Length: 259
Ligand SMILES: C[S@@+](CC[C@H](N)C(=O)[O-])C[C@H]1O[C@@H](n2cnc3c(N)ncnc32)[C@H](O)[C@@H]1O
Image (cartoon, rainbow, N blue to C red; front, side):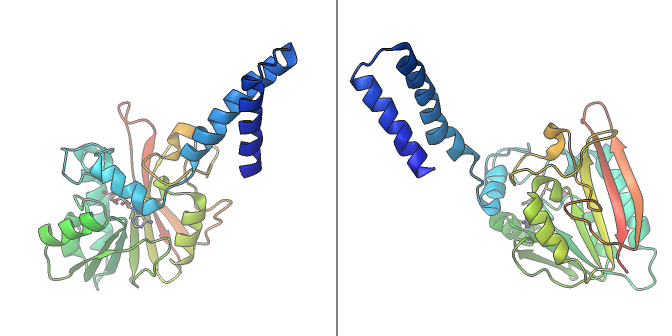
């Protein structure tokens, strides 16, 4: 890459300054200028940021919407047409146990949804990678059985529990990060995953750089049970789904039972 850049620099300035104007060199000159721009700017722009920086920027710049200087996790966390059926389905699941479950909410976001589930659990451990968001949530959502932790679920240890909720989180992450998260979930009996997917058939698990966007723009979405994830489960059950014309694609919540 460095040698390539050096060569492009050499060609760019040597040819330009010596005014060699044969058609071949003119063509090379033009190619070099394009290559120079590509090497210097385009490749740089594609280099992934650390996920923490990317997610912090999403909230700082309200890239998922909401009022400036508020934490807002997107329409999927606030549109009642999406949130109410989801909360209803999770309420049915969480109240079906005689002994309430310990739940880990991995990527809890602004907690507009999580706050409705805390009282249905024995203990609710809410985790997000964005430090200021966790500080805000700690201040605004207080319940005896509720804790907040600032962790990167791809690189840090995840607390133990009975059920992990991962709602519209994996869709924003690269395949490498998803693989690393899945390796940490083997202690949970239940995993409830919500993903925004293209409607109909699609090629699953096209890779992306972690950040604001999701695979929908590539006509792809996450399927944990196929390559490269090949997640091993005992049972799979769809709990709820939402599709509408205004929101492209379909938001599906799946319950995986691991053992
Ligand atoms: C679209 S929001 C969804 C929030 C919430 N689950 C909901 O459905 O309302 C995705 C959240 O995942 C968090 N997140 C992304 N990568 C993470 C990581 N590696 N570790 C912890 N949290 C992460 C983001 O900071 C963001 O708050």
